[in-house]
Image (cartoon, rainbow, N blue to C red):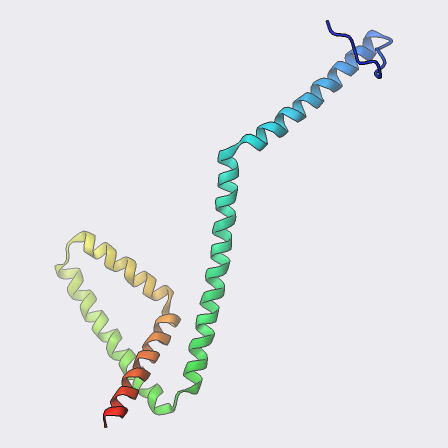
Length: 149
């Protein structure tokens, strides 16, 4: 057996010795748990991945909000005639998309249908951005058309 350090007192009774052993055992257990937590690479990687996912979701939300604000600002600046033409173009696009969707469902193989469904979901989820892009494209088209006339 080893001798206790000189600065520690030895136990004066078996009960006291038992208490010291139990305290040392608990302290050692806490130390081992702390060391195990520090070396758990998988848990740390999962925590970091969750943190990055949360940051990405926050950033995506911010970008979506900024895009919606920009789209509203562009729409507010447009003359009524352009807004009406853009609405007509959007309606034609919706009708064409609907016809294309029905044709796709009838003729396309299953993997193509699945990818098309994913694209449609993405378009529905990002309507504001797509609308802003459509309005921007309509403005460019009208500006080019006016320049030729």
